[in-house]
Length: 201
Image (cartoon, rainbow, N blue to C red; front, side, top):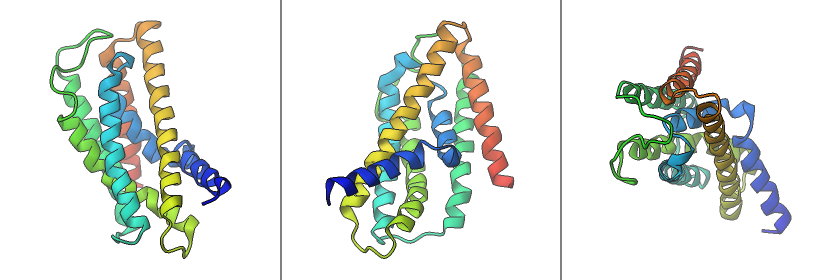
């Protein structure tokens, strides 16, 4: 694949996720990162990596026609993943409040319930990504290099989104002295409201 084609699919992947039209994926990332602050970046990296592993698998399998799926079903399942993530966040909010900078839990970094759920939910979101990519590729049968470039673009956009969420949280908690629990409740409530709207819409 020529550098120009690589760059094209890289940009397509980036703009597909870093785009207000992809608000379902954006809202999921917001819900996913809501319990964490900038000091928790190691946990966020583990969480986002789990999500990446999940959606990379199904993005590849669906784009290469190894698996088939119903786009309408995926459109329904994506907001459900947001709702379930929000419910997990609300369960965390019921725990004793933590101060800015404190770690949310003392458990391991990799084998955690949030990471497992992120990986499972990533499988669903990957199918959503593949619908767009397959439209771009048309009848091309083995678009392996295009797939890799597109996926890399998605990851770059995803990392930028997560970084912005953590930065906004840092500013609100440290400068405007918003409590961590309030940040969690507000962001989770917003994500939950959007997800329920998508489900009933």
